[in-house]
Amino acid sequence: MIRIVYLLVRPESMSPEKFAEECKVHFDMSHDVPALYKYEVRLVDREPQDTHVPYLSVGPFDAVAECWFESEEKYEEYLASGVREQWFEHGKSFIGKLKPIITRDIH
Ligand code: 3ML
Figure 1 (tube, helix red, strand yellow):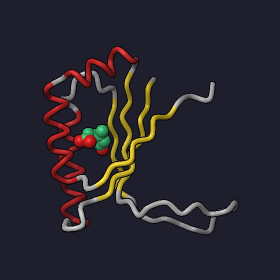
Figure 2 (spheres, rainbow, N blue to C red):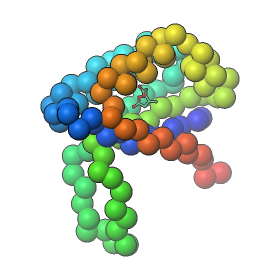
Figure 3 (cartoon, rainbow, N blue to C red):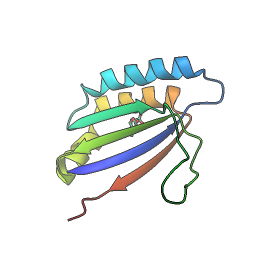
């Protein structure tokens, strides 16, 4: 499984409420995107700093998302799709900045 994690920052001019609304629309739209096995987007609620190891300061960001793909072939199919292109167009309307992190399994 290919999994890509994203940190999302809302545009400076957008309210947190509007951003939350658009995240919900984006989640609903994800169900029509071909070859996307799963998409999740979650709003940042709290960022506790009382960690048991040194705290790493990152951000600020407003949401964390993840895209799952079953294989490289599926990922290519996703990239080639027009529906995916429309999904990204919606993304451009409410994501101010995006930090993608391509992750891999530990074994
Ligand atoms: C890539 C993505 C990260 C995210 O949260 O949504 C998708 C599509 C997009 O950026 O519009």
